[in-house]
Picture 1 (tube, rainbow, N blue to C red):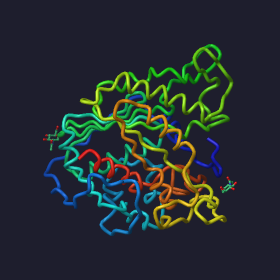
Picture 2 (tube, rainbow, N blue to C red; picture 1 turned 30 degrees about the vertical axis):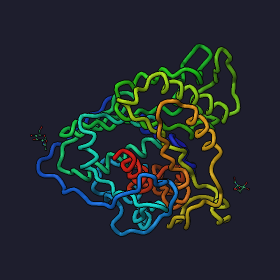
Picture 3 (cartoon, protein in one colour; picture 1 turned 90 degrees about the horizontal axis):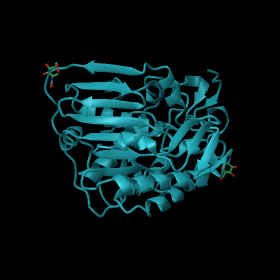
Picture 4 (cartoon, rainbow, N blue to C red; picture 1 turned 135 degrees about the vertical axis):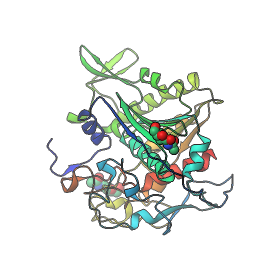
Length: 368
Ligand SMILES: *[C@@H]1O[C@H](CO)[C@@H](O)[C@H](O)[C@H]1NC(C)=O
Ligand SMILES: *[C@@H]1O[C@H](CO)[C@@H](O)[C@H](O)[C@H]1NC(C)=O
């Protein structure tokens, strides 16, 4: 693998890791003992806009120490990889008009008892999935769990609670099919959805792979209806795929049984002009968030496309609108403390503990 000064793109690490993994791995951790006491928290205003706010320093954060979560993968394990500054772990998201309830892992597990949660998407989904398993495990450190991988699905089970927290790696949501001409990205085919049946909570995401070109682009042709092309406008392709997914939601989701979320566009930080620091070419040495509630560089255009497609869905789908709050966190990425160490520059994924814990804390506030 040639990786000198590789700019780590989202999802790349995912395929590297997977190809070197066994097809099926089961780890069972057996422990005995009690569980942690429930944490408290202040109440929130039901009408509150959760995604507008600022980051405030709070020494009672992070929600878990990295050391208490033994299964964080190397690409997100910044502290263990040598990141010296840890201020970035001590921030809490403060909505402008209300307070978030602090994440309570034991309460989350009780509410989800007997149920399954599945993240579907690229390595940003993996980032949030790992965060949630860490948040839950650190809340009940003596409770047994199993971690299994079957094909593209990773399954973390809290056995005592019969709660499954799963990850289906599916970077486009629509299908890539091997045919005689090569690998075809089919914008109106969504057979991968078979894995989503019977899950109680689904959290989708796709974006970062749509701009991919060159050797790591995992398809040779793109198909819409019967038309097969070498390429097309990528934003239009993204939109078509989202519409296919939206039609799947409308045709298949029973809102009485299934809660559907979309993890919003997770932003990268490779251009300091966007946060008023033009000399910065990446997120390295960024130690604090952007102050205030707005990001100077504005929102990535994909956000509008996503919101417009979501607005056409008839079934309830909740957007975890994490883009702005994450844009403010130029300090939250692994930079040289990720998968490739000093040979890499990862300003796309997020350190754990870190920003995705807030995505999950907000998710918790939505479901309680
Ligand atoms: C954990 O698993 C072991 C062995 O299966 C079992 O004896 C023990 O009771 C379990 N602990 C909890 C808290 O469920
Ligand atoms: C960084 O952002 C600025 C402001 O939008 C833009 O003019 C510039 O071309 C960008 N630089 C790179 C390398 O993308």
